[in-house]
Image (tube, one colour):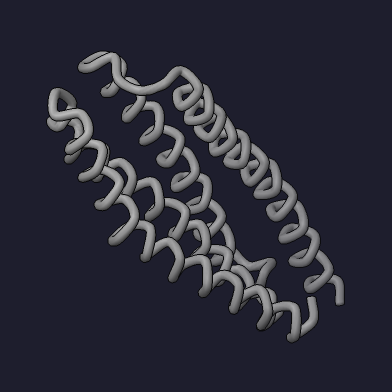
Amino acid sequence: MTRTAIVLSKIFILLMVVAGLFVQFVMIPIQTSESAADSPDLAFLRLPLLIAGILFVLCGQVVLACVWMLLSLVRREAIFTTRAFRFVDTMIGALLLAAAVIVAALLTMELTADAGEPGFFVLALGVAFGCAALALVVFVMRGLLVKASEQARYLDEVV
């Protein structure tokens, strides 16, 4: 990977993290407040959904931070070390947590208030399944990283 590609990727990641902060601290609070005002009978869901939304975006930011660190390892040509596994494992955990947060929010909404449009629930479940599927893909890629690391160590011993 070229230095330019790494720098551009890191700039994109930085922009996404800033956008995530805006969503966490501006958009989600506004949306939950407006929803509570529009439906006073469901206002008790404001805080749980606020926490779930912020936590969901935080999971995405953790994944982005891990990608940043993996890009740094690529730049230093140290991607085939055991340090990379820590970041990949963290990515898998954050993606699974994001899926669990969505499912928990949906269950909370459905079991306590029967709130929300059916299309919203289908969309949210799709996002949860997408997060879980992405975690599975990263898990498979982790296996490939393990094999590549073993091969790199073997070649280092041979040479």
